[in-house]
Image 1 (spheres, rainbow, N blue to C red):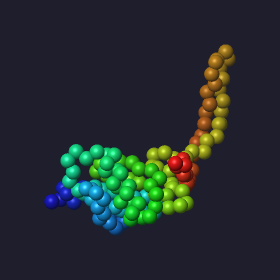
Image 2: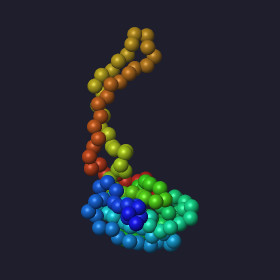
Image 3: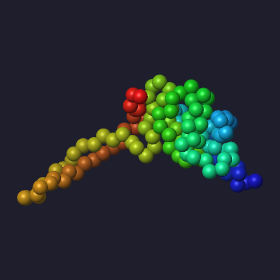
Image 4: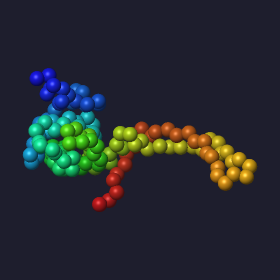
Length: 134
């Protein structure tokens, strides 16, 4: 019994978010929301589910529950993370920060056909972005 409970534990950043059970088509999900990010854990048993089919159903379920568009989605057929765009843009997906960089040194060897640049970059926190117009 403990094994099945562990499968529905919230992921990082979702602890304390109350779960909402939602069904869409043949899939059932536990949805947890923190700000503009949603975690969808598929709890339904499905034989060889395709990521494309499950993510489509998860996206529909999240739109129905939140009223927001999906800006980005990552994961597999068991667990998906989604960024919401509720009309004010969405945060960048995890792992792809927006960077601000400065060149701090330029090195060109005598007779070289290339130049090496030394740069210093920092991630911009809270950067908003919008997907390309459809």
